[in-house]
Length: 68
Image (cartoon, rainbow, N blue to C red; front, side):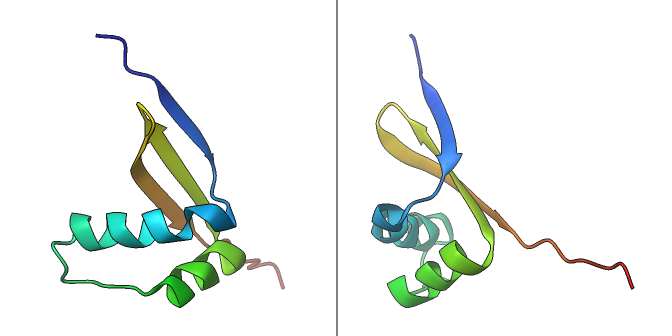
């Protein structure tokens, strides 16, 4: 079995699939709407993993400048 994994920055077209993935992964205990996911896309680092042509994972982080 040859499984292809692609990791890349999320794009605006990924918002709906990310929303569904988060809902499914949390068994609907956390249900962000597309507006919230759009905010993540533009305010945090948001990367996605595609495996065999489908969204398989998402990661977000926010870096802070702690230098004073």
